[in-house]
Amino acid sequence: MARPTVFVTRVIPDEGLKRLREHFDTTVWPHDRSPSRDEIIEQARGKDALVTLLTEKVDATLLAALPSVKIVANVAVGFDNFDIPAGTAAGVVMTNTPGVLDETTADLAFALLMATARRVVEADKLMRSGTWGGWGIMQMLGHDVHHASLGIVGFGRIGRCVAKRASGFSMKVVYSDAMAAPPEVERELGVRRVSLDELLATSDFVSVHVPLLPETRHLIDAAALNKMKKSACLINTSRGPVVEEAALVAALRGGVIAGAGLDVYEFEPKVSPELVAMDNVVLLPHIASASYATRGKMAEIAAGNLIAFFAGDTPPTALNPEVLSRAHAKA
Ligand code: GLV
Image (cartoon, rainbow, N blue to C red; front, side, top):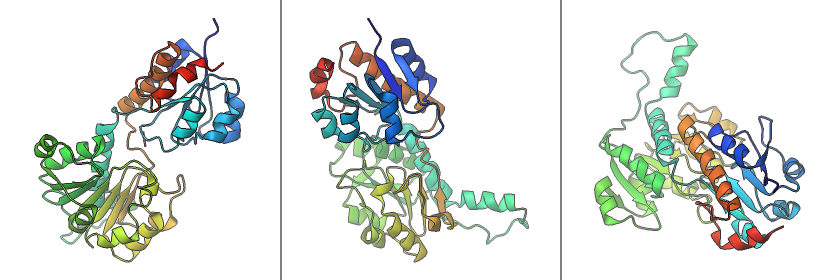
């Protein structure tokens, strides 16, 4: 029997690619950039499955152009690039990679928080400039992280991992979330649930960990930023559009907040030039889950989903498992 055919939209770690190649006729986009929509359609025409990254939008139009596709596996936990109802309507199973990147993402959120608070990037630039004149008591003063208050917006798996790290720094942690965490989790992590308004008004650091949904787009807008302390820093490792970037630029310019640490941007890969020019902002290129081990595990999960599907099983991290029998019945 012919092996199922798969198009992978970028080179992914070997932990996934090897498994895909063992089981399927696998074509990988060879370039160091995302394929355009037309290029995806051209490459994936007639194929049984797609492996995508968060840079590829998978919606009704794409799926209509690729009627042979039965499953699309995202190598990301966030799936705001997927139109799940469109996948379900088209009888296409969609999967993501939850559970393996929480600690790694929390590590980076904390690195960003510390770098922003203690001006690590700015200080590094000074050293490289060749202009450092020696130790100075008034030099590069920053904000203490230890014993500061941290507000975690969105208390899912990643938000909780950030809280765990904060306890090592004796931070006072509050969180806001539509759902309260179980009391034993709150006790263990030493956290308290408050309204978003209270969190914004009282936190020295606000770290955002919500998924991008219609109701979280621009959750942090001008009004929210105005509620924050003037001395506070905003950290975003979730999705760019959760923060209204123009409002953030205005808030940083106007001294409404003290600084920001960003891993994600509203219009990726574009970054507001005003942010680039600001010393009180640390900018990273969307690398929160970018450790060798974690990216390997993400690729492995995506491959595992395809392998399970083509073996007639439910992919372990299917987002719309109800569509399974229709997907299997597709020619
Ligand atoms: C990364 O941003 C992911 O969603 O996995």
